Image (cartoon, rainbow, N blue to C red; front, side):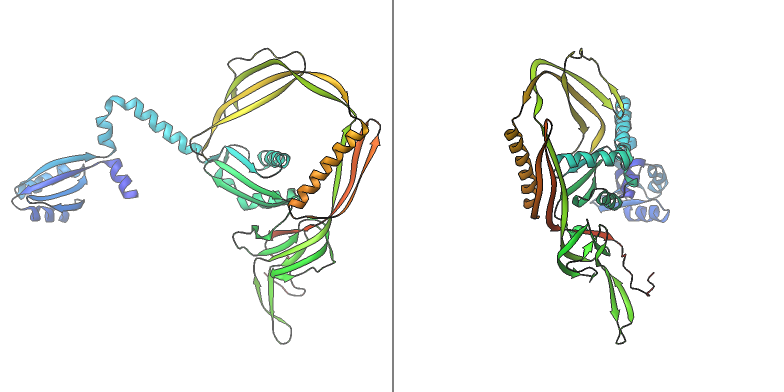
Length: 406
């Protein structure tokens, strides 16, 4: 591939030689280190390719062997420029464009979070862009494994995370609830650890050495199944140590703190027909707004729709436009009855419980109480759950007592 590129940049030609002694001519130019390739014989002589600078070098050997040469075709960048010399500015601009696209492809211009809970997605996205991968970060500086470990430690409610670099985008896939130790896709050695504080109710070890047992109380980060395997001799002494990716299912009783509220008196928005829009163009952190309408005097909501430029599905560019809309509204004072507010709180609680059950989490006890505090109804308490508490941590943490392991 590199040789083809070099030939294209230098330029090469296809020629035909014919005459009295074609074989002698070929032997002479090869002996004098004139490079030719793809030789084909014809009725008159030979057809082959050679660099454009070799044409002058061949003339003495053409005369010596009484041969003639016919130029069939020209290839390469120099001939392309010569044939399009009237379009030099266009070609130069196109070259600058390609160079710019290549440079932009070295950076991250889009971070996407794909998961179930929109609020969790927004929180994770904000954390990544503020603390780990600001837009415009070189792709070579991003360690997906390190980012996954960092997010697992930051968000205990997220059980599975996978990061993918593609094009100029970083995509983070996440799941909540049921954990799995199978997130270790690279088969690196490590331990199964507790993702949260719990009392173990069920434990199945597929690979590794179990450290905890049923009814044990464990803290977040405690090793449940070690990836360190010991082989003992007849005297019960360790003769060999190996490291594997631990694997298993561990369930435990956990506590989820639940809190929600509804104000009995509230304001309801009624939007008017007074809506205003304007467009903003941006390149990186620089924005240009050609025209900004007069801002509404009363209450209004602002909606911004961002359109990012991209060439392919995953090749985002640091430019685009934002469409901003101001929607005016008036506030109307309303109130809930106590029964209405209670039903709304119960509905939200049931939705939360249903979401747990859909993820395979067992609800052992519901100790959420609804109480009135002035003009507010508050649902507060705990949900006792039986759920998977496993998470995977690369690298062994458990070392046999009195046994040194490097």
